[in-house]
Length: 441
Image 1 (spheres, rainbow, N blue to C red):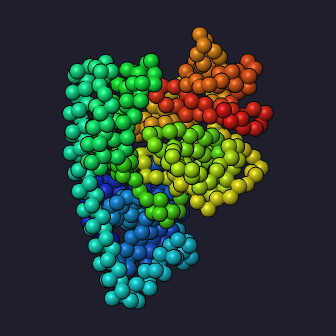
Image 2: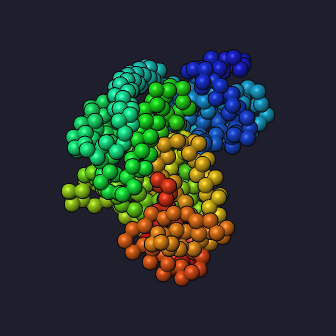
Image 3: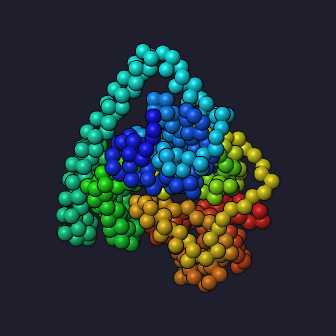
């Protein structure tokens, strides 16, 4: 059978997937392009640093891709087939299959040898996928209705004036939070409950409250247009609404192999839960990753694992789908001592600001941005802590008990390297590298 562009595009589930497949049908997007009389395969670069393993078996045809897309065949499969149709010489002819291709082909051959079982498996999977899609569609509709309610509440609050919330009791926040939870918006409900704490905990609460209200409003606006957004940006919105991919599904993906340095760790309390953020940095991929763990405040449990800041773990990391992936899981890892350790750090605050702007362009709801600075000096001005770079530009630091004096002592007036989180217009330091070792702040 002759394969043409028209035939390939006929497999696309929608016009958007067909268009994105066309954009991926270029050699520079792929590595390891190979094929034989029956199959073609290759690895397509994701929006981050990972590569999605994609293969097509013309005997069927059948398709396989490790990307998290809910559309099938996905844009990577369409792109691979279009590339093969229009530029077959880019594919290395090979009778030796990659391990992941051989495993998939063997499973297919077993099903082909048992056609009744194959049909039964396909019927079960189709029924499962249909039920899952229906559940998701029903929940999405509930969430949209709930967010419309939240948007009306926000608009009324702004119209009446933020200062008026000082006169409100706790039920003002809790009632709206409960309505959000009833609409399957658990994460939004949690954020609304935390708004009351902002009002009580900071003298500059009006600015912080307005910023948080604006972000919740932006989430509501995003859900109105969610069908028009790219798949990964949809995933960011789903996460904000409380829908996340299960860890078991991520563990089935190949992920990114690297040596991961533990850069810093922080634990915060959100209502009745403790949340621990552990930041990793890939020494080869130059990518940050966030390990997120929870445990109840009132139950004497511990986290499943502890990470030593400054240690290096060799293993496979799988990111949660996102337009700017940070949160991930780490699997199959072991502690190592690498021969050489190097990581990127911003020498100037202007470079950090540019990088942060690029990240926000990809994910407008990005809550926290990890960053490392080098050649900076901590200073105290009018009892407030700042960092100053080589250009004499300053960056505000979110101070906490004894932090300013700890940093001043570590620096001694000399430049240091420091890692931390950028959040709500300020830097939150987590660790300092001094004399080749990590000092936890």
